[in-house]
Image (cartoon, rainbow over all chains, first blue to last red):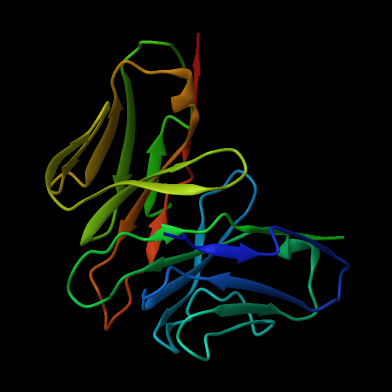
Length: 116
Length: 112
C-alpha cells in the first residue's frame, strides 16, 4: 500500500515568508510525528500527534512553528516569518498506534526547505 | 553531551567486509531503533529492539541494556549497503508520547 507522502519535495522561499509543509500518513495510522534534519545531523523531534491532538509539541523551536492535524489524518507544519536557520529537511513519520507497545515509525521522503 | 552517540561517524569498507557500527546512549529507554537513510533523504526502519539480538538477512542488531550500548553488524557488505545508518532511542512513555531521539548517524561507503 501507499507509504507516508510529503509535499512539496522541495521548497525554496525567501526570508520572512510563510510556508506550509504537508504530510499524508499511512491510512489508519493514529500517531504522526514531525522531525527536522539539518545537514550532517540526525533528525530532531518537533511535534507528535495522537489523533487530532498534539500530544507533545516540546520540540517546536519557537512560536513561528505550528502544526495541525484537524481530521486525524493529514498534517500541516506551518512556519511563519521564515529565517535562514529554518533551512533543513522536514521529515514526517507515522505509526499504527500508541499505548504500551513499541511501534515502528514509517518515514516519508521529507521536504527540503531552503530559506534564502 | 548528546543523549545518543554513534561511532564511527564515517566508515569506508571493501565489498565483503564485516562491518560494525556502535551506538551508546545515556538515558533510560523503552526501545532502540536502527534506521537506514539513503541519499535523497528516505529513511527506512531496520530494527526495533529492547533486548537481546535480532537478525534480518545480512543485518544483525544487538543491545546490552545494562551497558546502554547497541551494535549494528553487516555481514558480507555490498556497495548497495552504502547509506547513513542512524541509531535512535525511544524513551519510556510519558502519557502517550513515543518520540525518538536520534544519533548523528554513521556514513557507510562500501567500495568494490
